[in-house]
Length: 262
Picture (tube, rainbow, N blue to C red):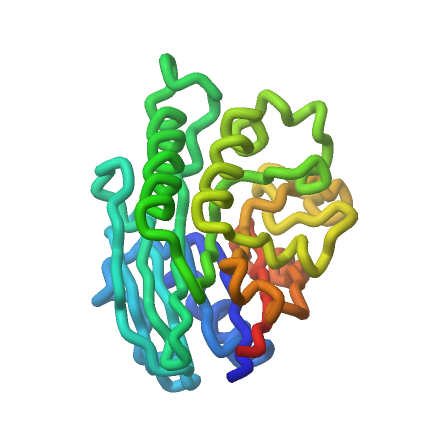
């Protein structure tokens, strides 16, 4: 079964319902994973999305913060939702598609502004969250699985606009990059985006603080699509829908896509 998957930090699914609908109509991914929905599940505009063909939903919500949802044209069933680091946050949900592929949707904590857990509790929470993700996949090594989401880390030098200037900026510090690599190794995950686009600057997030975000182009690749090594070779057609960052009242993230032939 061939299908296309997209991941997008929407930064409020209710505020940006029209943007989600636009993506569903214009791009029509078979599976759409959203993060930072900022809504209880019962208040998400799921009926409107169902009318566009996305009748299958697995989600965890939270009033005003966090929240993850998998919206699918393909039948699926929920298979888990972990509370890593015991934060009490809606940051993970997993579903199994009818073809047997498990999709994990993650929203990793951003980590605050100071990369020092002794003075910044949020940074410590991020490190603990990643550590528990690593241990989770080590304990139960995934197969036939895809991991997507806003992982809030740009791991490679060409995943940020200036490697040297961002080395001490949260999302690109060495401790975060190393921990993300440990998570990737724990599940034998393959970075499908970089498998398809191995070279060159590539971003999925541009700060709201930059008025001329497109001109300055000071972005970071915080949003990822991984697949376990047993199915990674079936992934292709990866892309970032950069134009969505310029839509009216946009999220500061752009959707990331990949297709799979399984």
